[in-house]
Every structure is written in structure tokens, then in C-alpha cells.
Image (cartoon, rainbow, N blue to C red; front, side, top):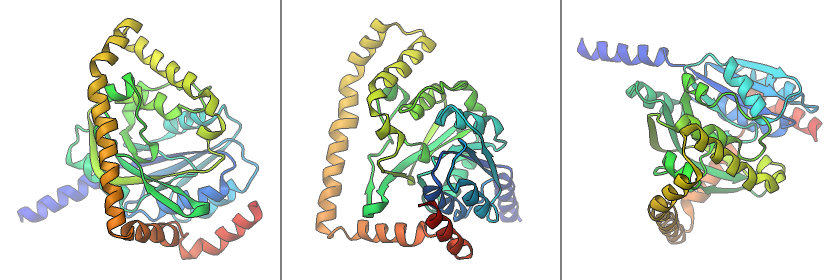
Length: 319
């Protein structure tokens, strides 16, 4: 009887925890097919998938309509001020308990939603759950492991910098107010401007899984607008300093105090781990990486059978 009660409580807890997926999009129909495929294949169904499109001229709407038969999709297409404007609209529309921002060219890894819901359900006081990620370059079928963000604290990000990927980051909806309104003029450090304010003073939990995959391609915003990078990063830090009432001098003192710790954690240890991973790949003939690469491209990103033919038709029309 006790076991049945516990099982019922677990099911009830899962039932009451919902996720809203927010996807900013602009002329990404061919990429969006893979992104939505990786969401549709999750064992745990999302509460809603909100696609905020910047008035695309390709087949983005056709792709969204195609996947609407597999999961609840809300599609909005209108001119906007860029990626952060689209994300901001999605955040304000979302009704789920947990929010998730994934770009229209990236992918969710198998079992991610199930793991995320378990992490939030196991500890209701947790506000942010995040993990590590992969990177991939589809045209060459490259697939790799990104550095772990397990030890990347708010202060590491604020004082120096460390890249967290949105496709591996989930947060409770009420935290969004800490980052709103977004600066919609940003083009490169959009995620950085979002992570800093919502991570500050929030209870975070890292889980030992690679939750998403970041696509590398020439058209991505960080490549197209690379010249803006340094300026935008410093602007985000300056705004965070002002929010925390930290002067420029105090900021530099904090950097000096924490620099050695940062270098050890995120430079020396990271390089050591990368070296060990490389040695392991050499010893095994890169067996595990090759197997994962085949699965990722040949199975995981392959659209469900019932819509595969229509997806190919849309992709061919979009070329």
C-alpha cells in the first residue's frame, strides 16, 4: 500500500510539472525540421512549443504545421527586432512551470526532458537545472563534446566569462522577470545577457548529462556578428555591475581575487580533462564517438516515419 501511495505521489508530481519550449526562428526551415524532431522524440511531452518567427520567407510555417500533429505548437510570425525580441515574446506567452529556450538550428538530446522533470520534481526548491552539451556540424557529420560547465558559477561568468548553452538550460518561469526586459539590440551575447541576471542568487542544479547539441554553421549569429562580440560582452557586464552596485574598481579587485581559482578550474583542469578524453579516444579507436555520431545523424535527427516524406519535400522546396 505504501509503495502504491509513493508511486501515485510521483505520478501526480510529474503531472503537475509542465515545460514550455521557446524557439526563436528566422528563415531556418531546413534546420527547424531537425530541432522539432529532437523535441517530438522526447519521452516526456512538452506542455507547449512556442515558435516565434521573424516573418520568414522560407517554409518555416509549413514545417511548424507539419509537426503540430505530433505536439502542441503555437506559431507566431511577424517582423521583430531580432532573437532576443522573439525570445521575450515567447517568455511572456509561456504558461509552463519550466521554460526552455532552444534556437531553431540546435537539438535536444535523448531523454533530456525526462531528466529535467525528475531533477525539478525531486527538489521543488531548485530554480535552474542545467547540464553539458555536444556540438555538431551536419555538412561534414562532425560531432563533438563541449567543455563541462559543472563548476561554472555565476561569479565565474560575471567576473570573467564562461559559455553556457541555452539548449542545456532550464529555468522556472517566475525567474524570467529577473532578466526582463531584454535588450533587443544585442546580436552575439544574447544568452549571456540572459544567464547573468537569472542565475544571480538562484538555486541551481547541474546534472551529469549532455542535454543538448549546438549546431555549428556559417550563418549562425555569433559568426555573422563576431565584430560586435567584445563590445556586447562588456556592456552586459557593465549592466550587471550597475544592478549589483559594484564599482569598476571593486569589480577589478574581485577579478584579481578570483583569477587564480578561475584559471585552475576552467583552464588547467579543463585542458587536463580534454587531454584524458583525447587519450581515451585514441586508445579505443574513437569507437564511442563514432557510434554516437552514427546514432545522432542516422537515427535521432531522422524525422518520424509519418512525416519524413513531407519533411523531405519541404526541404527540397526550400533550397
